[in-house]
Length: 338
Ligand code: PMP
Image 1 (spheres, rainbow, N blue to C red):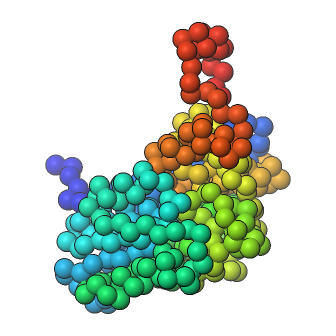
Image 2: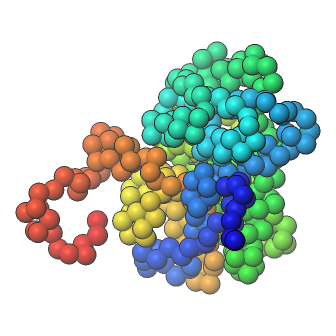
Image 3: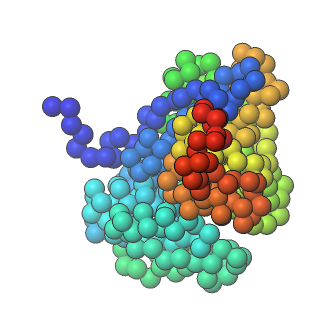
């Protein structure tokens, strides 16, 4: 019988898919590493399994223990899946800018979720960093993976994402583009690709305008899961050859185009990374092979990026396409796409 004993076995080994429509007019190939194929629906499954395995080995996480983590949702799902398999309790701490749909998902997996204000400094006692520290200190048997300092985060990408891309492109990859949140993805994958190619593969970070990685002050932006107001230990500041800042508006407009044109229903940080990848493609040689990593799926953003009223409220363009009468539908040209 062809059976997997656990979903945990299915983490990683995600497909590489050519972007065909949003790349119109550009010569280089742009290939998307589609991470929503992970069982938890995001790239974060990779770090969840690696961090938990290491904590079990070191004894930091013992049977009956509790996993406490500040997470914007995706890391929580990965941790919750592994925790269920192995019998751990999960307590997650999220900033209040995270979409409610994502928090509901964590609760559906059986995790307890504490929500904290986004608009306070990391040192503030109510910040999601401080609250998770306090819970981890006070719950007996608690272990905090801390994806912002845990070197098993970048290591998981060094051991899985990087080698997968090298194999999938038969060593032809020339550029790797990814958003930077904890920096684990770009640091681990970038390090592997630089090493294996003798420094030939260019590593390009994509960052929301306002975030520190692209020289911002940490001012607020709406793209979730990427950008920082602090410098995490999981990010190697020497890894990127270039960092491209992308506005929320451009990120979300591209996110919607990916769903409509290339049938990729993905999250806002994916649109951001694709905008950066297309900017790279616009000046790269025609034989370049550009890989862009798409961290998660779009279902967690239906009430935001894919909601016209929400988009219009922030001035992100005319999105008046969802409300339609039969007459409107008949009046539109078939195959008009957007
Ligand atoms: N996009 C989303 C939606 C994420 O949740 C994350 C992780 N915070 C990232 C991108 C960035 O990945 P990393 O933390 O590895 O830099």
